[in-house]
Picture 1 (spheres, one colour):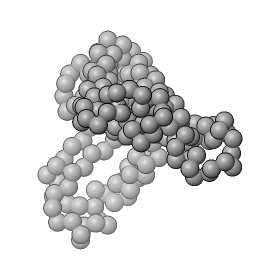
Picture 2 (tube, one colour; picture 1 turned 120 degrees about the horizontal axis):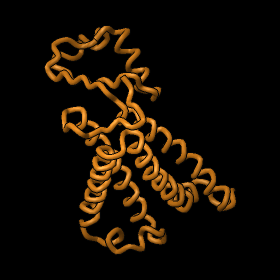
Picture 3 (tube, one colour; picture 1 turned 45 degrees about the vertical axis):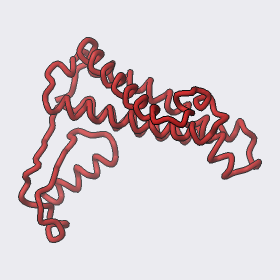
Length: 198
Protein backbone atom coordinates (compact mmCIF):
# COMPACT_ATOMS: atom_id res chain seq x y z
CA UNK A 1 0.00 0.00 0.00
CA UNK A 2 1.39 3.40 -0.94
CA UNK A 3 0.54 6.73 0.60
CA UNK A 4 -1.88 8.94 -1.27
CA UNK A 5 -0.85 12.55 -1.77
CA UNK A 6 -2.86 13.77 1.20
CA UNK A 7 -2.26 10.79 3.52
CA UNK A 8 -1.42 12.08 6.96
CA UNK A 9 1.38 10.43 8.90
CA UNK A 10 2.47 10.44 12.55
CA UNK A 11 -1.18 10.40 13.70
CA UNK A 12 -0.57 7.22 15.71
CA UNK A 13 2.74 7.13 17.48
CA UNK A 14 3.27 3.41 16.88
CA UNK A 15 6.56 1.59 16.30
CA UNK A 16 6.56 2.50 12.60
CA UNK A 17 6.26 6.23 13.35
CA UNK A 18 8.91 5.97 16.05
CA UNK A 19 11.32 4.23 13.67
CA UNK A 20 10.69 6.87 11.00
CA UNK A 21 11.29 9.75 13.41
CA UNK A 22 14.39 8.11 14.88
CA UNK A 23 15.82 7.70 11.36
CA UNK A 24 15.03 11.33 10.50
CA UNK A 25 16.56 12.55 13.77
CA UNK A 26 19.73 10.46 13.41
CA UNK A 27 20.29 11.45 9.79
CA UNK A 28 19.90 15.16 10.48
CA UNK A 29 21.98 15.00 13.69
CA UNK A 30 24.77 13.19 11.83
CA UNK A 31 24.69 15.62 8.89
CA UNK A 32 24.65 18.68 11.16
CA UNK A 33 27.36 17.29 13.43
CA UNK A 34 29.65 16.59 10.50
CA UNK A 35 28.91 20.03 9.06
CA UNK A 36 29.82 21.71 12.35
CA UNK A 37 33.01 19.65 12.63
CA UNK A 38 34.04 20.67 9.11
CA UNK A 39 33.28 24.32 9.91
CA UNK A 40 35.33 24.14 13.12
CA UNK A 41 38.28 22.76 11.13
CA UNK A 42 38.15 25.78 8.77
CA UNK A 43 38.24 28.98 10.84
CA UNK A 44 37.70 31.20 7.78
CA UNK A 45 34.41 29.52 6.80
CA UNK A 46 31.06 31.27 7.19
CA UNK A 47 29.73 28.87 9.82
CA UNK A 48 32.89 29.10 11.93
CA UNK A 49 32.25 32.82 12.46
CA UNK A 50 29.47 31.94 14.90
CA UNK A 51 30.79 31.79 18.45
CA UNK A 52 28.54 28.84 19.27
CA UNK A 53 30.21 26.71 16.59
CA UNK A 54 33.78 27.97 16.78
CA UNK A 55 34.03 28.21 20.56
CA UNK A 56 36.00 25.65 22.56
CA UNK A 57 32.97 24.74 24.63
CA UNK A 58 30.98 21.57 24.42
CA UNK A 59 27.79 23.48 23.64
CA UNK A 60 27.88 22.75 19.90
CA UNK A 61 26.92 19.03 20.26
CA UNK A 62 23.91 20.12 22.30
CA UNK A 63 23.13 22.70 19.61
CA UNK A 64 23.26 19.96 16.94
CA UNK A 65 20.92 17.70 18.93
CA UNK A 66 18.46 20.53 19.58
CA UNK A 67 18.34 21.53 15.91
CA UNK A 68 17.88 17.88 14.87
CA UNK A 69 15.08 17.62 17.44
CA UNK A 70 13.41 20.74 16.06
CA UNK A 71 13.61 19.25 12.56
CA UNK A 72 12.02 16.01 13.82
CA UNK A 73 9.31 18.05 15.57
CA UNK A 74 8.64 19.97 12.36
CA UNK A 75 8.31 16.64 10.56
CA UNK A 76 5.71 15.53 13.11
CA UNK A 77 3.72 18.78 12.83
CA UNK A 78 3.78 18.81 9.03
CA UNK A 79 3.06 15.09 8.79
CA UNK A 80 -0.03 15.45 10.98
CA UNK A 81 -1.40 18.43 9.08
CA UNK A 82 -0.21 18.21 5.47
CA UNK A 83 0.79 14.63 4.74
CA UNK A 84 3.69 12.40 3.79
CA UNK A 85 4.69 14.12 0.56
CA UNK A 86 5.03 17.48 2.32
CA UNK A 87 7.32 15.83 4.88
CA UNK A 88 9.49 14.56 2.02
CA UNK A 89 9.60 18.09 0.54
CA UNK A 90 10.59 19.56 3.93
CA UNK A 91 13.45 17.09 4.24
CA UNK A 92 14.51 17.80 0.65
CA UNK A 93 14.72 21.51 1.46
CA UNK A 94 16.83 20.87 4.55
CA UNK A 95 19.08 18.45 2.65
CA UNK A 96 19.60 21.06 -0.07
CA UNK A 97 20.95 23.46 2.57
CA UNK A 98 23.35 20.75 3.75
CA UNK A 99 24.46 20.13 0.15
CA UNK A 100 25.30 23.80 -0.41
CA UNK A 101 27.19 24.15 2.87
CA UNK A 102 29.13 20.91 2.36
CA UNK A 103 30.07 21.94 -1.19
CA UNK A 104 31.38 25.32 0.00
CA UNK A 105 33.33 23.80 2.89
CA UNK A 106 34.84 21.03 0.76
CA UNK A 107 35.82 23.41 -2.03
CA UNK A 108 37.69 25.63 0.43
CA UNK A 109 39.19 22.78 2.40
CA UNK A 110 39.72 19.21 1.32
CA UNK A 111 39.53 19.57 -2.46
CA UNK A 112 41.60 22.77 -2.42
CA UNK A 113 44.36 20.90 -0.62
CA UNK A 114 43.90 17.84 -2.85
CA UNK A 115 43.99 19.63 -6.21
CA UNK A 116 45.97 22.72 -5.30
CA UNK A 117 45.97 25.35 -8.05
CA UNK A 118 45.14 22.95 -10.88
CA UNK A 119 41.51 24.13 -11.08
CA UNK A 120 40.09 27.63 -10.73
CA UNK A 121 38.00 28.15 -7.58
CA UNK A 122 34.74 28.25 -9.58
CA UNK A 123 35.41 24.84 -11.14
CA UNK A 124 36.43 23.44 -7.78
CA UNK A 125 33.16 24.64 -6.25
CA UNK A 126 31.23 23.15 -9.17
CA UNK A 127 32.94 19.75 -8.75
CA UNK A 128 32.19 19.77 -5.02
CA UNK A 129 28.61 20.81 -5.66
CA UNK A 130 28.07 17.95 -8.14
CA UNK A 131 29.53 15.44 -5.68
CA UNK A 132 27.38 16.71 -2.84
CA UNK A 133 24.23 16.76 -4.99
CA UNK A 134 24.77 13.06 -5.62
CA UNK A 135 25.18 12.40 -1.90
CA UNK A 136 22.12 14.53 -1.13
CA UNK A 137 20.07 12.65 -3.72
CA UNK A 138 20.97 9.31 -2.16
CA UNK A 139 20.08 10.62 1.31
CA UNK A 140 16.78 12.01 0.00
CA UNK A 141 15.83 8.73 -1.68
CA UNK A 142 16.68 6.88 1.55
CA UNK A 143 14.52 9.28 3.57
CA UNK A 144 11.71 9.09 1.01
CA UNK A 145 11.64 5.32 1.31
CA UNK A 146 11.62 5.53 5.10
CA UNK A 147 8.88 8.19 5.24
CA UNK A 148 6.61 6.49 2.69
CA UNK A 149 7.01 3.02 4.21
CA UNK A 150 3.71 1.54 5.32
CA UNK A 151 4.88 -1.79 6.76
CA UNK A 152 7.43 -2.49 9.44
CA UNK A 153 8.71 -5.91 10.43
CA UNK A 154 10.73 -6.07 13.61
CA UNK A 155 11.83 -9.46 14.92
CA UNK A 156 14.51 -9.27 17.63
CA UNK A 157 13.97 -12.89 18.79
CA UNK A 158 14.65 -14.56 15.48
CA UNK A 159 15.97 -18.10 16.00
CA UNK A 160 17.44 -18.85 12.58
CA UNK A 161 19.95 -16.91 10.53
CA UNK A 162 20.13 -16.72 6.72
CA UNK A 163 21.81 -19.74 5.16
CA UNK A 164 25.04 -17.95 4.15
CA UNK A 165 25.78 -16.77 7.69
CA UNK A 166 24.08 -19.59 9.58
CA UNK A 167 27.36 -21.11 10.72
CA UNK A 168 28.94 -17.90 11.97
CA UNK A 169 26.03 -16.48 13.97
CA UNK A 170 24.47 -18.46 16.80
CA UNK A 171 22.55 -15.66 18.49
CA UNK A 172 19.21 -13.97 17.75
CA UNK A 173 19.33 -11.43 14.93
CA UNK A 174 17.73 -8.03 14.60
CA UNK A 175 15.90 -7.83 11.27
CA UNK A 176 14.31 -4.70 9.80
CA UNK A 177 12.92 -4.83 6.25
CA UNK A 178 11.82 -1.84 4.19
CA UNK A 179 9.37 -2.99 1.55
CA UNK A 180 8.88 -1.42 -1.91
CA UNK A 181 12.22 0.33 -1.73
CA UNK A 182 13.68 2.39 -4.57
CA UNK A 183 17.17 2.75 -3.05
CA UNK A 184 19.50 0.25 -4.82
CA UNK A 185 21.03 -0.90 -1.52
CA UNK A 186 17.60 -1.67 -0.08
CA UNK A 187 16.58 -3.47 -3.26
CA UNK A 188 19.68 -5.64 -3.15
CA UNK A 189 19.06 -6.42 0.52
CA UNK A 190 15.48 -7.35 -0.31
CA UNK A 191 16.65 -9.59 -3.18
CA UNK A 192 19.32 -11.21 -1.00
CA UNK A 193 16.76 -11.84 1.74
CA UNK A 194 14.34 -13.46 -0.70
CA UNK A 195 17.11 -15.61 -2.21
CA UNK A 196 18.32 -16.72 1.20
CA UNK A 197 14.75 -17.41 2.36
CA UNK A 198 15.32 -15.73 5.71
